[in-house]
Length: 71
Image (cartoon, rainbow, N blue to C red; front, side):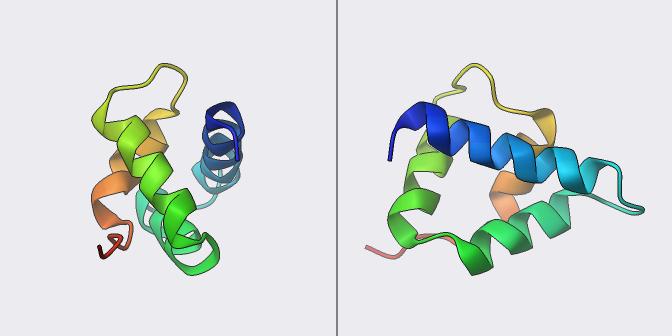
């Protein structure tokens, strides 16, 4: 999956939860942890670590709560 698509999908999830009541970072992290494959999560977390442009601030806030990828 392309880097642009990973970022776009994460941002779409963040946009959905941003308008829901409560802390959006937790639900974003839960959704990604439960529904994304390990390679997709690893790619997203790499983008966050690299401060890739275009990431929604809510995705960045959710990153520490996303289930880590085990090697």
